[in-house]
Length: 217
Ligand code: ADP
Ligand code: NI
Image (cartoon, helix red, strand yellow):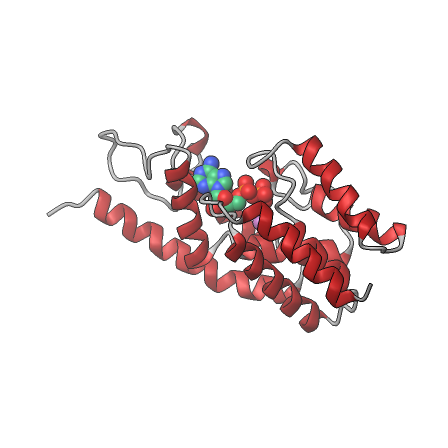
């Protein structure tokens, strides 16, 4: 089996898993992560592109929000065995997929290889900027969360917010608990640079969101 065939099988496996997704973890998300990760790898001069591409394609097929993790991990392990890769490479890909997720910050301390860092950066880039905003509202809608809490609090100074833990779940809360933190958690210089502009766009967006929500005239 050559690498093109391996990638094609992985694409089919991924497509089958994500084709009906409406939570922001759809086929298009995976394709963007694949594209971003390949771009970052080229900029950073990292050469194990097969590991990066396979990990990108398969990264969201093991996610507790979407599926039963133990079963999904078993299925993925069997799938990788069929690709006839060296065992070390199979384990490397599984390790990346298991630990790359943000997971409320719990995985930040786990060391990832440069290939894993690149896939993680790509996934995090797709969580911020215009697409990140869209995915967050899509996710919140799917799981029945409001876009923002509907109470009569005063306009908030969103530059000084530290008390978001007390807020009820909402799409906007997710910006504070995760999205605004991602810029500083990027590993590679290429991703750090891309994250900067996407981060600024989200800040601008949230400012406008609050201006409109707490409209005063
Ligand atoms: P990871 O796999 O890195 O832990 P997630 O799958 O939790 O990341 O999140 C991916 C994207 O799904 C987020 O960037 C966001 O757009 C959306 N999302 C996840 N959790 C929430 C939430 N509680 N509210 C709104 N959007 C969410
Ligand atoms: Ni993802």
